[in-house]
Length: 431
Image (tube, rainbow, N blue to C red; front, side, top):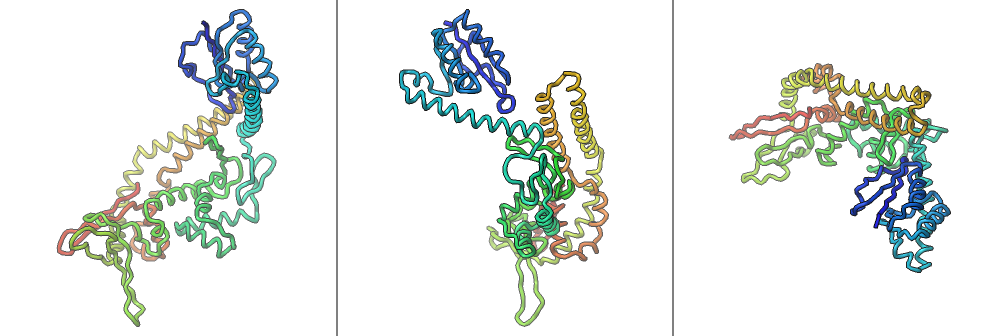
């Protein structure tokens, strides 16, 4: 006995269906994507060649309204064709249980209303319009894009600038409350730092990011630097990320693999203080000894001045330049395709919906390429190297500024003990 199958997919919401999902041998598969031409062909075919079974995923696929679904369902079953749904229990509901049948159609009606709303949102995404809901803090909704809110955008800008300056998320949250009286959670502050909207992009729930849709609060360079700061802070404890001492969270003992914490020692009645680095959890017996903080810092600066120029020289070699040039060419090529879409529509190659879908995906691909480009080392790394390899530069900085530069380039400072109280350091650069 012949078995037919039918599937329907909305191009705005669904992916095309694999014909091998049924698990049984199918004589004929009818599949629609957007239009229902194959359904009309199916309805005409079963009048002449009546199959024993018609496989559906859901009854919803037989039409856009309950009336259409009911009429087609009645026409098919009047021919003696048994309908089997793989994602519904319709076969059970047709055994004379009017209550279950009514409940099933009520569920179909609710899903149709939901999909109609989703379809409207999907159309707005294709037109690169903001998603539904309130605009993020710092913006207000315009007719077709987000507009800067002049009273709240400076608050977000100042928050991000403070984080860029000191690299401390909790410190930026406290700064916001002290200066503007704006209380936010640390999790909210983290979302602000990574929110694509503040970078001039729209990000939709399907994972696609559309670049350059409105005026940004953060520039591309600031956004890339924030991403680097967040990545580096993930490698240290939350308290170390905002610790007042620049070496906090960076130093590790190679022998016992323990992180070294900063300890402060003072003498009663004296203002001078002495800083030491000692292991947090040393398993060795006897325990690894503490080391003077200033000595570690001075040796770290000397090692940076000695080793960093060589690393920069290697990174500025052709491979890095080729990667940057390749990404720029790929972005330009996709932008050229976007610019050609209006001409292709005039020539009849694309209809409006197809062109919007193509533009939507191209914008998403450009955003991915730009993200890869932002993750590369700073473009002015050679100029930065000339500055940070000057010893006096480091000693003129505040502790917060030292912390910023150290974590911008260093992944870890390892203490290599050599016996008899002697030791040396080994730097592990991020690049």
